[in-house]
Amino acid sequence: MTFPIYMYGNSILKKKALVVKKDEIDIKKLSEDMFETMRLADGIGLAAPQIGKSIRVFVVDGTSLRDPNMSDFKKVFVNPKVLNENGDLWEFEEGCLSIPLIKERIKRKPKLELQYFDENWNQHKEVFDGMKARIIQHEYDHIEGVLFTDYLTSFNKKLIKNKLLRISKGLVDVDYKIFPAKK
Image (tube, rainbow, N blue to C red):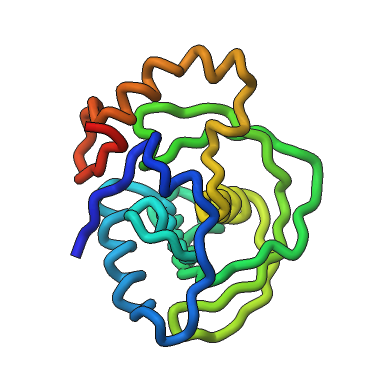
């Protein structure tokens, strides 16, 4: 099953998501549906708030990237907690399925230590770096109610204000189902 992706301006994208309790929902089924939704939208990460579910779950799949370090990077993260971020900030252009057709350069730390559960409720504590860390940080922000546009300067936000308004009204041409913030 695929879900419509909630667009910029929808209030669920700005809320801190709730912790998931074991057996509260079928994480395996939800994650399969999220992977399918993400794949059809040509994404590499998708957080539950982006499909209208305010819970602390996200999926990532960097296997489509032309990077040998990403060849096995397909994971489900349930109730993740950032334990540490370190290194010098590095800038990279980011985009988002909830903010289509806009890409901006965002600074993030290159190394991340994370504790999380997988789709089988096995607990993990792992260190990620480089592109893996960036994708996780972007999706983690979603469950914290933060969008990549929140990192922009007020000047850069003004430059894209009209584009964001159009997105929030659903006036965007994408090849996936969307749920606009306003009708």
